[in-house]
Image (tube, rainbow, N blue to C red; front, side):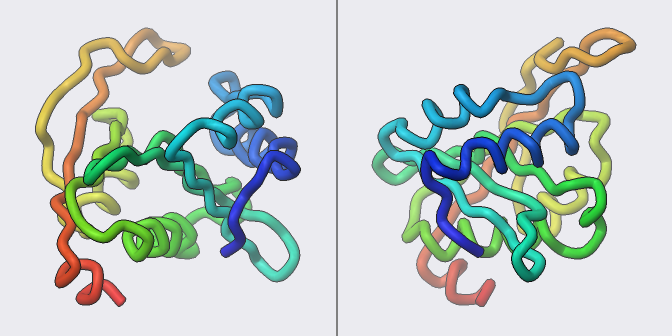
Length: 151
């Protein structure tokens, strides 16, 4: 894992575009996201090749996974799991939130393995070629004991 900075904005945009065609953010958008207060972005590497990332923002004792993406060529190899474990080691307590499409079974299974629980729903949040999909809002309570257990 490496920490992302504004010089990585093109890499983040490319991974995002490959993982989520038609709904990705530009390099300029990534530069702004990386500069935001409380932002933390980590890039997963396969040797020297970037294969995924996790972007979160935190304030106080709460954090939100804004985006997690794995390049299609690297999916189903534990990249997202490693990114989430890495994110948790950087958080000392409180809660971690995220949103996921109600139809994204693979992501929902991953989050369930970590212990995320549903706490809300955002109707029509995601645009898809076939219409709109609801987002589930998930929460994971974090404690030092929990983080140490995951290591």
